[in-house]
Image 1 (spheres, rainbow, N blue to C red):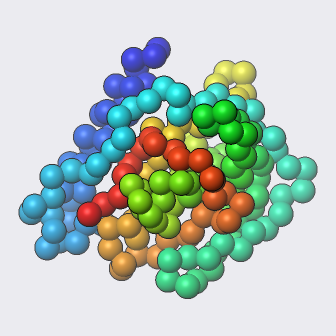
Image 2: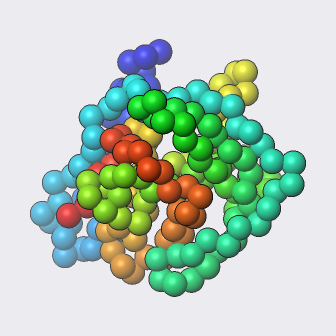
Length: 179
């Protein structure tokens, strides 16, 4: 099992690079695709992979999230993950745009944002088929953290991580900044 998830992450990264470099719907501007040599990632690190209980809220509060183009989008604050990174207790809120959707969206900023990673933050998408264990916990794997489309072109509007998901610790996993 240990190597399966790592192999899956490597395969996903290769597929994303292929898509970004060749697909006409790629967020990489067409003029840059010819010289595109792939995205930069941190090495896969098991210490950034967590199996966690989601502390689901009884009352799902609507949160208005700003976007990269000064717009706004509404999400439901669905629950909270609690865990430790390098001995520091951290929490991350999980959101849904549709209460009937089973997936969770976990946007975050961390101490690498604006330095090694995209300044506005990165995302994790948690799909029940691949991120939910048989006992109901969630797999929060920062090796899967990715940049929103607005990191590649300002033609896109992206929701920004709410300040409650700004972490003081570095998350040295997942996708790095695009240059």
